[in-house]
Length: 418
Image (cartoon, rainbow, N blue to C red; front, side, top):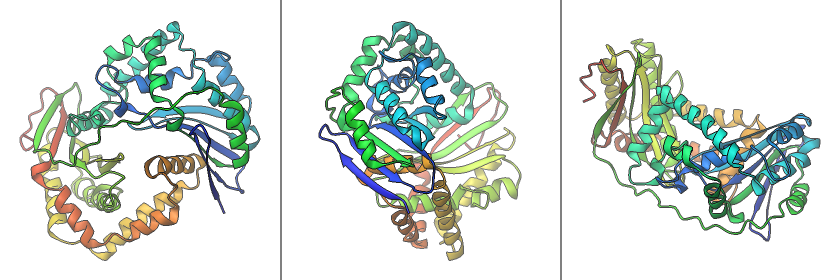
């Protein structure tokens, strides 16, 4: 049996842990409640850039020393930036958690941000940006969220812009850290072979710099429906990539679990309606799926597929047909239960990984100010009924609120999308 514990230190840092007695390794994350939605047009990309730069050395450690100290203990470090959070995390054998904690604490408190390293890393991040631009499967999601969240900072891409990336300076990075990396935004989360009391002691020993407090000021997304429209991007590509979707409710909404079940029925998994209709029965798309990318106050919901330009109109017609079916007729109890079991199965399979458990626990604390148990999440999924799914279908598949985004070759001739 795992055991959750939570401590709030006098300086405001939260420490949460889950001890799993039957594993020998740990996953430890230093989370900050800051992401690209806390930026503006002038500094867009700075959160992600700082994530890169924290690995480039501290006052006491070079980039190589950071890597050497962790890898010599049989572990590794990594990090990621999302639109709402940044996480620096490490994994390793349980006996080496203190060293990993010490190194992560040094990285987040004492980055050097050397100008020569900033210049070098800017080139690396610009290459990462070019990779996204060259990959329509990634690019289309950034552009889709830019459209549906227009007017809100959720529309900003995590990686930022080339101009911004090339112009970040040492003072820019230090100022942003000072403004956004306050103790009240910091969460230490660990899962696996961990001892909560030891984590609290390590925090007292190694988190010794006063990082202050940083109020969370976010402009939340208004629950308004956008008018339907179609937009096109031309690229030198062979396939046509398409998203049809809209914004919908986020984590704070009680309807988010219903949306998750509905999305599962529509297009998540090879037995879903869209996969069967478009790929299996008609063979006109290799990739087709629905998605629900969620944030605190909103989600990006939609259907993504890619096909050749001769089949795009047929694919769009088939998608519309499946939409109509879901709006007009309740799904069967069998199909409903299959969708629920698929979601619950994914949740339970994720428990096999301490990294997944640490991430789920941390996000629960950041979004809900408490740790939602697996049993509670399963109960919420089980509570969704066929009537709820029908109601969600009629709301989310309203053609008057669809945003259609198409990435196509310059010579592709499209009809139905326009």
